[in-house]
Length: 567
Image: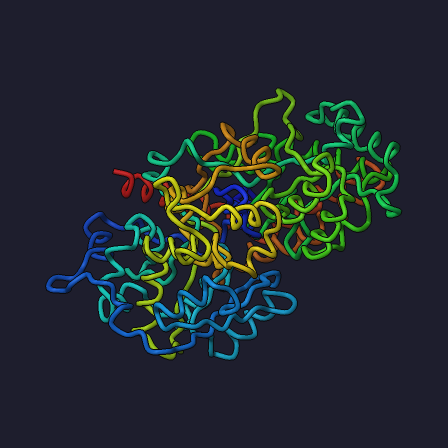
């Protein structure tokens, strides 16, 4: 079955903070893999997150601040920052004694991570999308340590600062939890902060071009195609280079997140079309929905009429970012935070050339989209390797990072350097905020705060320090309000690994990755139908029934689990 779940995004994520916008995927981006554990009973969940009897919940990291350097693997090739070159990371090292050596893959993330797993040895910390198959591989291969056991032995303070809902959600069938999420929001968080929640999923257009062609309605297939055509005719070139009428996420081995990524079970397009995830308690196969297929054919028609650039089939994120910075796309079905840096740059040069969110593809009833908001799974999870050089210092540092003190340090930085108490409120100094709003990349290097290091950020906690949104961040952010929903119950339902279901799902996802671009490149709707029908038959032959049965069971367990920790 191919239903959804975004993240990372992913699920995405999620940028709850204005110009604080990180280069992150939507928390909805990617929402598969690590199989859901059985619902933990409330007493069991309490045991996992309660301070053990007789133990003092004091900040463990303060007991040892001798210099130590941890190797920290980030499964994101685009991450550009180094620890220790900015005041914020320098301040944290001075405070805790911990330095970090980030290890980032130079090319394909999955190849790098799989090579490390195959070697049997991992760096001290590992951060990756919670939806990645590697999470389950590392847990089942006993390559990472149970955080609850580390905390019991070395740092009871962890249980004081960890969120019980998050640890319960990530508790595996063996009763342990191995990873802790960032950008995670529980049902209780929705009750407390929900009115502030926004989605990362947007349909964006270049403001000047959109206005020049009359601000057309792009919700229907006809209006969509006509707008792309009008933009290309009126603006054939941008600074001497061909206009790209439509931008999407990169095409990968298992599809495209903008349209449908089978491995992450995620589809921005299906969310814009408000296609339901379930009907009468049963998961709905969104990939075969008539509205979804009709819009895929609309994209096919766009290619047939010369409105899809060949670039979109081959470009990876660095090339996409470069072209956004050049203003070469007219429209994009894309995550607003993932182009925030480039959009700020465009806005500084000329506000009219920035990208704004507008109503995009819609179903035939023109229902409002149902966009993925913050979920309990978050965006990434961080794990501690069994090979970690110092178990005690590792769990103590993790506890510090997830605490309010750690999050405040990572967000605001050092007092007097990047923030101060102004008008009775702790906030960024004016010149710091000005740079943050104008040049995120320079801000990261000069100050390193505002979650430059986002690995364990709590996006709800940061609301008390976050400055108000400013343009060009504000408009796309505001556009998502009222359209954002928690979709946590659909996380963690995809079978992975070497189980019968996992092998079947992997085969189906890989086949979809090969089929999707071919569908868009077909020369007629008839050819599209023939290829699409073949894919449906192939996935049935690959074991679709087993995959769907597994997903339904996990979905039902998720629903019970969320109800349990929402009491």
